[in-house]
Every structure is written in structure tokens, then in C-alpha cells.
Amino acid sequence: MIDFKNTQIAFEAKTNTDLQRAKFLFNSIKHPWIVKLGKCFVYVTTKLRLPVAWVLKPTIYKQFVGGETLKKCTPLANQLAKYNLKCIFDYSAEGGENADDIQQTFDEFISSIDYAKGNDNVAYAVFKPTALTTDALLEKASAKAELTDDEKKEFEEFKNRFEKLCQRASDNDVRILVDAEDYCFQDAIDEFTDEMMRKFNKKRAIVFTTFQMYRHDRMPYLDRLYNDAVKNDYTVGMKFVRGAYMEKERERAKQFGYTDPICPTKQATDENYNNGLRYVIEHIEKFEVFAGTHNEESNRVLADLIDTHNLAHDDKRIFFSQLYGMSDNLSYNLAHEGYNVAKYIPYAPVKKVLPYLIRRAEENTAIAGQTTRELELIKTEIRRRKRDKK
Image (cartoon, rainbow, N blue to C red; front, side, top):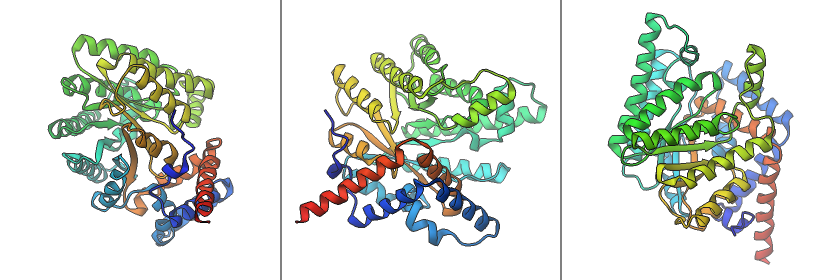
């Protein structure tokens, strides 16, 4: 049985200075008032166009972001490879929705796919569909509302960009993850992702859809996808996450009077997630699976399923993943046992990645026990090192 509390393995790549910095950071973001104060500070400095990199780069940026560019992320990828960990580089800049912003982001997605080509340290490429068009258009298309002629043209441009990314991934033999988005955008994304899987996943999974398993409709959808894959002879690329927009989704459902799409309890979400893992492993002949989770039980469930079904720990169809800067006790211990593990690593210039960093701090504060767990593991390793020195 994997010991996820083995801090010696979990932090073997970290120096004492790294641990002390992480301890200070997680000690800070466990206090909601500090996170709110930091959010205000970032807002004011951004509005006034004041330099903030000198504050953020050695602290929260260094903890959660790989670098400003793919080239600057390369040393990190090489370091992680020493511990049997692969990378997924996620361009996490969040800008406007004008044509120039969309084109710039699209070009960066293309660059990330090209960077992954033949790079043994990179497991997948990834892109956000909402970065390829405007939110308003994607929401309208998902609702099956009548589009104007101009909107129809814009939507065709969105689909064209989407398909070009999948085609580039296929040409480069790079697996690509299509991120999940808000409920109001997701139907259009799901429909087109399914189409891309039918087109590009004939020999293996290239395109991966993402299921947010806090949605109570995902298991029936998973079953439909499996039957469609059998019928149309392709492999489903399946990325599981729990979900990132719960409070916003509940509020929007209440505001617009439709059924809340989110599972009623955390336990129901956990069961939904683990049932998804069981389903794909039981039908692994038609799936490749990417399990993105910081939940110890779900990681253990998948590891046990791999053993129960007599699959190799390094079966290329199965990957575990955690965000960079978090849950190293899961990532490093799984990798140490020979499982496929990839760290999900954001990259972007400091100013452009600020919204991501604020969300990361807020999520760590909001998720019950997450920051406390990180802190206790760090403190345990610091104590172990001091004890071993004596």
C-alpha cells in the first residue's frame, strides 16, 4: 500500500529553503483575511500599473507557476523528470476577448503543442476553449439559441481554431486535454470535443474531454460516450476532475431557475468521481484516463483498480495528476511506485497570471483541510530533517 504520508519521498526535490518558503506561504493563505488583502493589493497595483513581480515572483508565483515562457519552464521539466514526473504546461494568462487577445492565446496553445512534440518530459498539451472565443457567444451556442449571421461566422471561427489545435496535436502525436468550463458554456464544448475524438482518436486517444464530476449528469454521459466509441470504433480520452465553479454554478441555477447541475453533497461528488474511475478501468479497452485529483482516497482507488485488473503501474493509458505546488505527497509517492504521474504546471508572465494565482490562494483557503494538510506535511519533513541531522 502506498504511504502518502512519506514526506521524505514527497519532498526529496525540495531544499530546506524551498520548504521554509512553502511553509510561510501556506501559513499565510490559511487566513482568509490575508488572501482578501492580497487580492485588493493586486487589484490596486494592477489598476495603477505598479510593478508587482518583485513581491509575487519569489513567493506565490514560484510556488504555483513554472515560469513566464515554455523555454523558462524547461529546467523545471528536467528536474521533475529525475523523479519520474512528467509535465503538462498550461498557458494560464487571462486577458480580454478581443481578436488580438484570442489570436495571441491561440498561437501560444500551438507553441505548447509543438513544445510537447517528441519531448519525453511532457505528457499532454492543454487548452481552454473559452480562450478561443467570447463567453457571450459560447453561452448562446450552448443554449442552442438562434445565432445572428455574424455570430454564426464567429462560431465557425471558434470551431476552426478548436479543430486546428486538435489537428496539430494529432500531427505531432501529442495528447491534448480540452479543459472543462462553466455549465453555461459546456454543452457546445462537449458536442465539439466528442466530434474531435471521433475524428482523431482512431488509433489511440489524442483528444481528451474533461468531466467535472461534481455534475450529477456525468455518469450517464460517460456511458453514452463508451457506447459511441464502440459503435464508431475510437478511443475515448477521459480527464476526470471534481470541478472548479461550484458556488457560481449553484447561484446561477438559482438565478435563472434551472435544476442545480451540482451533486448535493461532497460525498456524492466523491462517489461520482470514484465511480467514473471504476467505469473506465472496467472498460479500459475503449478508454485512456487522466485522473486529476488532490483527493487521497481517489488516488488510492485508482491505484487499487490498476492492481485489481492486473494492469502495469506504468500502463500508458492511465495517468495521475496534481497541480504544481500542491500535493507533492501524492505525486512523488505515486511516481516512486512506478505509476504515471504528471504535474499540471501553469506558465505565463506575472501580470497575466495574476487571476490564476488569486484563485489558487482562494481555493486553498476555501477547501476544507487543504492548506492545513500541506502545512502539516511540510512541518513534518522539516522536523524529520532536523532529527536526522542529530
